Image: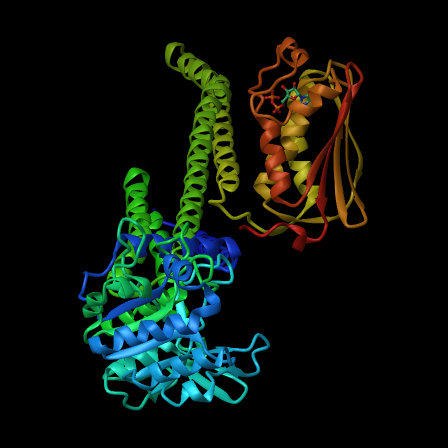
Length: 621
Ligand code: ADP
């Protein structure tokens, strides 16, 4: 639909406001939660192709603890587990148990001995609760470690779901890489770590992990099996004790050793897969390790790109409703909404994480705003078209009503002339009458059309200065014969030498109309008084009669087209009830107004109040 420049600007502003609203709503906790839920949903919907895992789990589970002496004897349990594991030939062993405090000397010695034989050992270090330092393994354990990694996850502040781990973490002056990362590095030969602000490189992998976000790595959790367990080769220490051959599972594997017993594992966290069954920390580390092995990293779409996408969505929504109308517009908008809803899915397939709420809110708000705007503009245009039609119908009615009288006169007179042989004088008289009536008709049509054009904004008001007195006198001249016929005296109370500015022809029509009404609606032998005075910044032109008058309710209606009072109809005077509505429009276009005071049977006074100052006339729009 074609929009005017003003409408286009309004449309643009509406869309911009909707876009801004969407962006602001994107900052709410609700929007964040929606994004997180959408992420989890897509995550579960689109798991990566299964692969052969490199990690394996050696667990201290509930039965192990129960039958091997409980947590108090954890170090012996660990030592036994390692002793049974080592002969199988694992490639790396990462122990997710903090070994910072001395325990039973005998147990510690046994564990240290087992560690000393463990190939490519990675030990765990935990940050002190105040975040100032690390709880490193005791030196007697640490001396056998090829690397020490931190064991912290990064559960979301909003819903506590663990979707990432920070690859690096600093406490005091010391920084530690994540246990999973160190295990990965060791499994790839233990080379150096190369860092840029955007990425980390190790073991031949470039990991997109920005320093700004503590090098957060989104974990690609393996899809759990139906019982909710991560499908990694695993055995508990107790199972190994019972069936030493099980150790074969761990050959060449990167083995994560840790506590999984529900009663003991403090580090269980919910993941996108496990809302009901939190995952033990050691399993989370193994999943993070597998993510590094896979090398299919999820990257967040940058904020700038997301905002850019939203701008594009807003513009598209705007174009849809600017160029289409009706159902094609709604169908196109529905397609746009569908595309926006599925965009995060498509992005996820490309390993990109696109927020869900912001583009979706933008699409809904902008499409809604665009549709409403267009709806109301269409409605307004429709109303305008209807008003034009009404005006046209009224014009037709006017022509049929108002013109019938002069036309009848012309018709009758011309018939007289053609039928009868008339005296020269009579013929001249009738010819003059025909001439006058036809001129009156022409003037009437012209005035009516001019006022209509003015009201429709298709015509500018002429602005000429003229003597008010001359105009009033000209009107009086025309109305006098009518007045004389009814023996109505016309008295001029005051006629100043003022000059008016405006459209002389239209003003003459207005004044003439008031005068003819005064004469028409007055009984014989009465008086009509005309006065033109100046009061401050305005002229007051009043026509007072001693006629039939009207009550308050009637006064309210007389400016409506085709309205006539009952007494006026009863008076037998011809009229179409259109003159005063034209008078009012003319005066309003001149920046003035009409005042009426009247009482039934007592007469009326119509006063035109016009600005003396020409600049008060409103400029055409
Ligand atoms: P018309 O005179 O052709 O009916 P107008 O629009 O000029 O149409 O006036 C509308 C109505 O206002 C008249 O029909 C009449 O009822 C009332 N009216 C106008 N002027 C007077 C007046 N001077 N005295 C009494 N009634 C009037």
